[in-house]
Length: 480
Image (cartoon, rainbow, N blue to C red; front, side, top):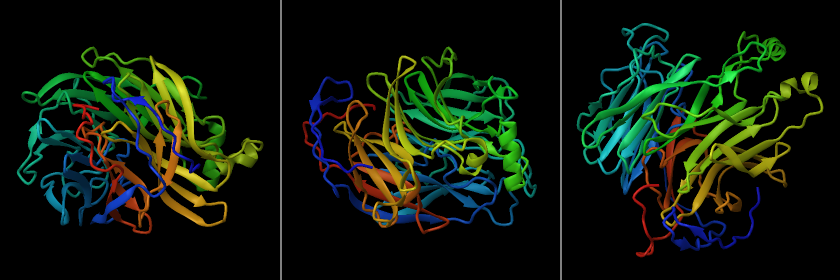
């Protein structure tokens, strides 16, 4: 990944017709102000974990208020529903738990969002409907809880959710929560088996109410040996007004019969899930419930590769910026099925305009195991600068081990301006950010919540300052 010289860029600030010149971000400029443990946990051994809802977030910032949801494993409770959600708040003394589920059991972590004008935190829960003591999965009931931003220790109120019909929700929700801070609205998606996702769109302004509800059908895999719906999981979802944007990765049992048989010889398992195709769709107005045809943003289908969704950002001009990482091939199958293919790891950006991919940018890549880019997220600052934060592992050109988080500043067209290392003592292998997709505003602080290296079964937090105090004349938008 290049560590090049900073160039001066002039861009339009959030569509307000104001131009700025970003201050130089020199090597070492990100200042780590806080780096600490939030909580430790016991693995639940139920197939999920605290970072499992990676397409949403478990971290929000509203002004100086920073809060997070956690996942606690219950003792003497069999999986799969052997966890409960917890709610945490940060202050100068560190992290403290301010709330926890007292009457529900669940499998997955609970995404959250903030509606700053309403001074409300939304927590998405999915409690099981099975009696205590029963092992396995089963039916569940989505719940949305509203906490006061000022007094989160008070009992939350339930936000009424309206669904089309009576969907058969289960403990495997793959749910996604997004919010529009300016409009005071939210949207919640929750998967139903391998066919579709149910969604509900609501508001808290002036009081809780349902605005729309519907169903998102998965793309059709017509080219598979056995045509089938392509279930989409771990999506990044963004809401603006009544428009929603949705991008996620295919998650189905290996559809290639020859590859599936070969994998069974290697693993002894009847199944193996593939994550090889990145799909995007959008709905201009949820009140109509009509989503556009799916667009395949990227694919590693030809060589049994791997794709991980990263993030999605809605630009002021309406363009959709999509981040993902990919691996070109599964090396276990290379000699037998595609011997001439070459391995490649990359961090990619696509810009979609009017339903078409208008631009593609490779932000980092390697053709070997040198410095491999992993999970990446966007971060916006109040002055309009845009960054990508990612984790990098492998070895450098001198053969030294590399495990670090890096910050890539982007120009207006998505091209990387420069890359610097974030000087964390314990870099994050996987992490959430305080994203605008969940109602957090652009901030001079990059907040990270996730899994630090060399600290198993621990969730950590870091606050990194990217900019100094704002110029009083710098405009602050009402919404990203």
